[in-house]
Image (cartoon, rainbow, N blue to C red; front, side):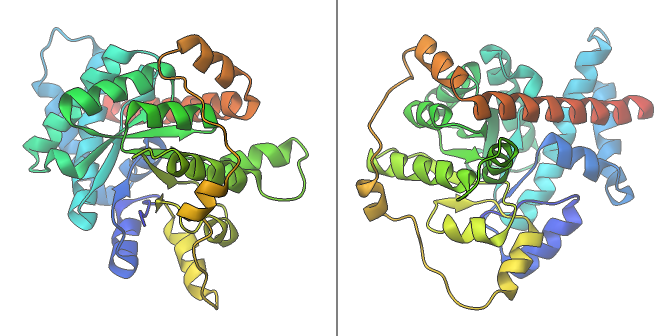
Length: 310
């Protein structure tokens, strides 16, 4: 069960001592929050030194992006020391550029190697766009890199990522649920239902891609998705789970997968089919764009902090 740092590494350290998570993860919002904590000022200093070591011919914007990338790896290295595995996200600004995504991923793997973190202990997080999934396929098959496709809100993203052979996908359970509630949906939890379908589909058709459920709002969502390959759960929800009485078993099994009425489809070789299916899923379109905008905003804030120090 993966555990996600809430606002700073100290939260993960506390959770790691108590819950022994199998890995930790970062995203731009978490990094921006952690970077404001004085306890990690030394990591920012390292990023500034790195930025100053770069070629003076680089545009200032690119220099800041590379410094933020370096800082993400510094935080990731600290998480790796606590959990033994870490996921780090490619800047969402590259979400629609396959080549830039590949280049950023390879840079981060090299930066981790320089910190003594082996490639097989790093997952590179990439947005669930057509270009992102194609970049993930290349990184997986040509470089043996473990890729986690993130910002997943719809079946088309999950299926295409699985066809690409990536290691994991991260569907946002709570955010999917939030969107459907905002549309007036009552009865059942749509976030749980959609992620349940993703897990059952991937198992039914024998894909090796793991589902890593994320963005849990409450313990009930966790319990209803028990049996999912991996769960990224905040320390807050883990604490609430610990306080609940009674045991609960897996809801998602090989039997539930085979029983699921989910016809097989394919998108990996048909960009038009992927984009059309994605376009027809209003939740996926709206929430994916919202998540990328938010991450991009926090990335810029982080770069702003670095710019002030430079």
